Image (cartoon, rainbow, N blue to C red; front, side, top):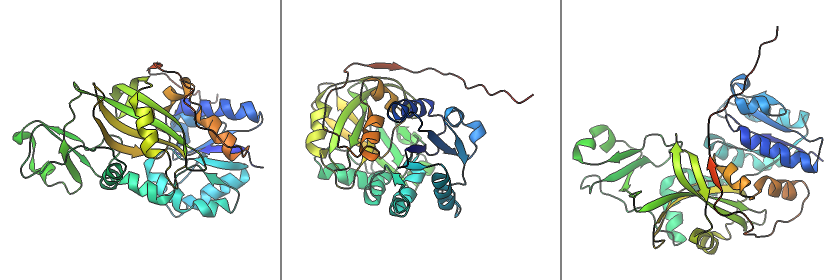
Length: 322
């Protein structure tokens, strides 16, 4: 059986690679965690992995063949995608790769498309009884308001608009922007919730992470909270057909916990997942148990409350050959 794992488009996710290496080698000491990148020599996570393969962009006709070839040659049995642009492609070709005993830990295509289009995400939240930000008529606005693209990621092209002078023609006529109420961070706290879904499509663990400080769209300081969100989400999202693996949901919760607002869903490991791991929410161990050992995972709330993460910059140094 193929026991190696491939984490695709790994970029700066050094901690995620190290976590998977630790958990995989604890069960299969000879197994390896490989990675892919467009430019492996410029990716710190690629350098610390057990081996990194250069691949073409996912939009290239070569990508699927390259991915299959590297998996077959290196006994890779499981692919873990990490960036939004790969998700739909890998979901489309999930069954094809499975013919070669290569699995992809990823939800079905319909759910990924729902997550990628914020308009569909809003409809999903409403169907599940989760409030979304009130939509604002851009031609008759109430300030302050917030605007973001319905297919955006990495906090790109988002705008906090305080008055009519800031509502420029470029923003007003942008074809992809959604206009909505501004959620005041003096009244609300922002959360990302890591959720692991088993192969039976039932949620197994839910960890709310309060986003204390964010840099470039990713958590820089955060803390786990065993609060109302755990059972709120279990009641509404406890079973999601076609959903497997790690997803992360962004929400706002009012300080008195009387209002919860759904913002978006990312059907992959989020950049802040290491905080949940250090709070004993061991999603990689779940992945290994389900996909390699073929054992079920049970629902649990056995993780550590109030675990604080303070991130800092570090370096990977590469010396040239003499």
